[in-house]
Image (cartoon, rainbow, N blue to C red; front, side, top):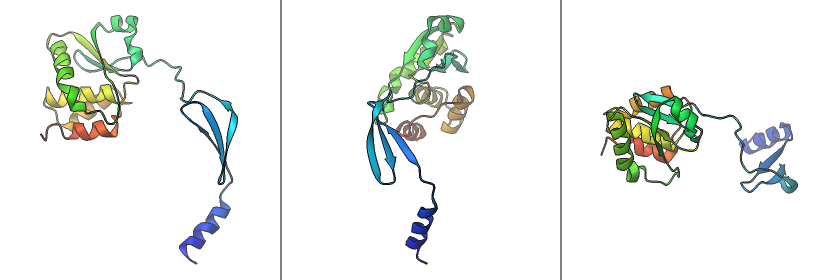
Amino acid sequence: MSLLSALQEKKQQLKRTETIITLEDGRKFAEFKNNIRQLEETSLGFVVDTKPDNIPAKVIDCLYLGSQDCCDLAVLRQYSIKFVLNILDLVETDLEKYLHECMHFVDVCVRNKTNVLVHCNAGISRSASVVIAYLIIKRNLLFDDAYALVKQARATVKPNDGFMKQLQHLKKK
């Protein structure tokens, strides 16, 4: 039996399923076998997160990492955070282009023992990348150690692939 024949036979045994695809603009499509049809219903083109993520993670003394929910004034006061650094995330963004300015800002806060929150929308990629870079460049940590420290403080961090590549090469330059 050829590989193609074996695959075709196995395909016949698979359970038939319908997949609902939701586009960014909210349009929905149903896919069944090789047919795709547009559904009349629409919805939000993204997952709505109703649970606040408003607890900043302390990475080192005076340096906090979190999501935009941490910018609530009550949260900032609770953690004595005086300064906030907001970061933009695009895979093609050259992280190093903005690092010097960001790290200088964070370093001044930390050296003056003033709490600073580095955040982005979700506190997962861009803000985590800036904090990891700060630890590598200003605190002389190796990438793996800096990443582990940030991951220990905030388990959900996951810099995008473009940022990860840039972070892994920071000390090599």
